[in-house]
Length: 606
Image 1 (cartoon, one colour):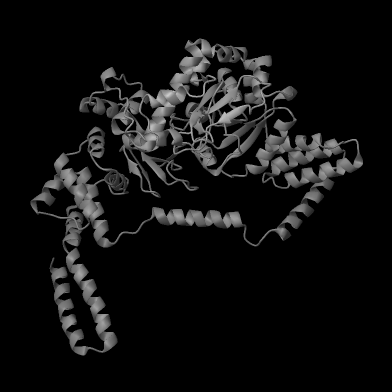
Image 2 (cartoon, helix red, strand yellow):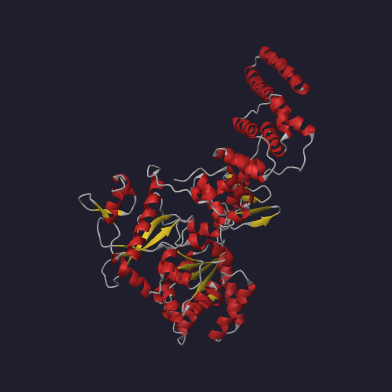
């Protein structure tokens, strides 16, 4: 049982941590003035509204409103508790962590999602033990060793073996008093016609699937006997913690390498990812048997702008690469293709040719999409036949015309002209005719552009939320009070009270906490707030304000807030005056006008 993490250790971690370094592991940040900006990891967006301030050690999304310090980010990003987030940040900074502070949640009575995460973690440990420590696992271990997957790789990817036993895992969790409802929800078990549960995975090499934070959320089980009639791979069904449209295999391991290499390699299968990882190519991921979804693309867009496809080199792999390129039209990315020679898959190529050759292929063998597509067309035509030559030329022009760069167009026109033994001038004439034809067929407004512009406008609108004079005065007062503690005494001495509850709550928290003179104290103050107040604090900290305040400015803010009740009365009387005028009640109009004059005198005198 972990002891409570003392404040001294939290302060040490805070003082030694740069929030930019931590968030950069999850978001591709770019310098923008004094701050850093990127795509928000908590919701999908095209225009970056996620901002990190290194000076104040805060993050804030101007679109969704989330914000706070580095611990709040980890809590939100990885669904961790506050103590767990402190430990996680300490690990990232290589800060020694006393064993007594380590947190381990063994309580199965938490939410279903936490229970399922714990079950998957323990299942992986059980399957790993069976693979490495028992006679039952010897066949699977031999299979892995024959594929050059050694113990280090097994441990890195937490590989295991599910024995040919229908209730081993079931009994394992029943002994731990897991309810039948949770067992059914877990996806670890299947159900027969009589409603009896049994282990879903049997006699399979087990590959854990993790989410972006590294939590095991699913499994893929591979058969050991290639001649077996059953499916080669069996994947977990979707559950509360696993959605195949969101998860990318190995992303949690590959994130740093993706950022460092400034590209991600998309492999076709898990074994290719493992082999590539062992060979030193550690920025590889694989989708869950489908083309990349919008959610997966958004996740990758926070890390890189370059996707390189490295599928099998055989005919089905080439066809799959072509399909992928035709589907990957997200303009946030540029794309490349790594074609594996000799019709081999990446795993076969690495085992036959060696790691160095594969690393060289990845580094120097990246084709542009158009280059791959032209080669793909060549495979389907007999270029000694005139009819096929014309078909090849026509299809090639349909792809070249999509290019925006004049240099690229000229380069590929030259290649096709040389290959077909025709002049570049004649091909360029064909391209011009094709452009005119496409322009006539195109709608007046490109729908994608209209959608994109609408999205940008809506995001900009969300980022520039308008506040009335009273609320703006409250926000500015809080900003200065946070940054200049002497103002607290002034407000407290005058028995000041904010109009809006959320600002009053923040003010009372400031009074209770004391002065904030540095980032460690600011972080400590933040840690004691609830989530809504943390978001509000991030908004306030990120406000663009002068370096110093003036006394007149503060007096004006205080006056605006104190007079807010009078302004509400003025607004109410104006409404009543309109109604009295509509019904022709002159007497009431006169009375209301007198009240309005008196109220305005009070406002002017304050």
